[in-house]
Image (cartoon, rainbow, N blue to C red; front, side):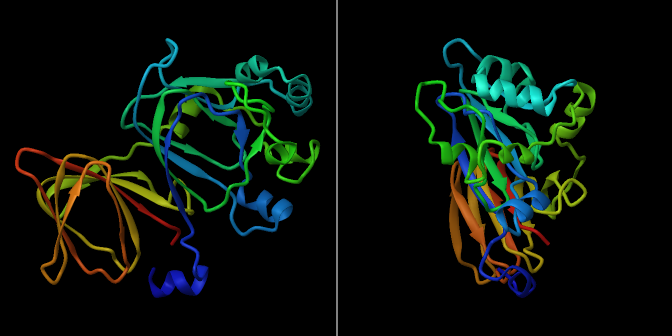
Length: 279
């Protein structure tokens, strides 16, 4: 993991990676920011997270979408009343409903309510906790959710301390939710595009690498997680060892790996997500 990371975080990677294929809409939920997690859960990590949309499919006539952030005018008392009534339609109406498409990137900061819609296929990087406050006590398909899985031991009143009730206006929201940075050349043949950088969050980073021939990737003293999202090719290490890489595969790159050569298959650009933990 690297000496600097070990000195600060010990055996914790500081990040958690997931693949999510939503067969139904996930329940409306929120995760604490780091300050709230320390106060309520005595944890050094909250749960800011980031989604990269890999694809999606139509389910029951509905295209993939997400629900994210409060609309203007939603108050804590109103939100609690909707919870007590279990008015799920009312809860969803309080959030922005946003269609999503392959290649889009959504950063969800701790405290912002959200739900992943049915049919979404995502890869996620997040802080390494599972503090999930759920306000729906039954899933859309009828699975009953235990009380403890709703409030995580906080109780049904204090759990609302995890929500940020500031509205996210649509114009500002799209700028904040969908992260875009200009591409830059990748050493060799290809380019890199920062999807989530240090100016967006200090907790992790994600960049998209597109290799069109042969390119070099340096760990720079930090471990990385590579997810192949398109194409195929070969990794070559500093000692000449090779490893094939194909769409859907995931790799851990140690901080001490040295320069990694990435060669895309002929006429098949290789697209990778390169995820890292906190600096």
